[in-house]
Image (cartoon, rainbow, N blue to C red; front, side):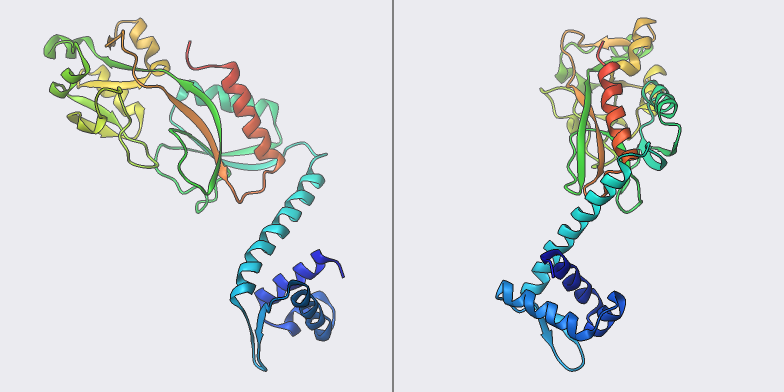
Length: 295
């Protein structure tokens, strides 16, 4: 019996806690299961199960070995799935989360759907904090450096940010001349949905010290409030580029660019990278490379 077969039997016994039940599931005798476990314990020189007439339970060493064996079997299963699916066109439903950024999302979605017509997108457009794994999503696009060890990540691209205000606000409150002047102004702050942390404006002042007229986790609301002269905001330059060009917003500290940020694709470490998920991630990388946000 191969080592892999012995591992499969061990995992099944650990899950059923019964030699006879495992034997029934595999269509072999209970003695064959017992001999397989005994051979495995002899080879490893360790006891994997405590046995009694009524039940079997894992030893401490058995529990540690079980975790490794499950990972090994998952890798084997993933390898087989990749081979079986490699000759197929990407297809099936893909459940994803995208940010509220029309200039990015609209062409991204249409371009992907045109290239992969057999993939059905289930899109949740939100900036709220989402547990990707618990809520069953395949992938998400987020800003900020990834911090969740349960997720794999791929950097997509960076963008410059700009501190801006409406002409009406500047006429009423005056133009700040240096970052410390912001402490005397109404600031419209963005917080990361994933952490609740306030997004940094400049390197010379902590954003959490700024007087907050509003804190919001989506830039759509902040842009609207800024255009209405309700405060100063630090926003992605590509989102306010047209407003700056048309004079609806004015740059603050134009000679001192705000801190840069970037977009990341995130997906669960435990999730098998299917052709549809791989196609989506690769498309994101290609899309952001061909459509840089800094221009």
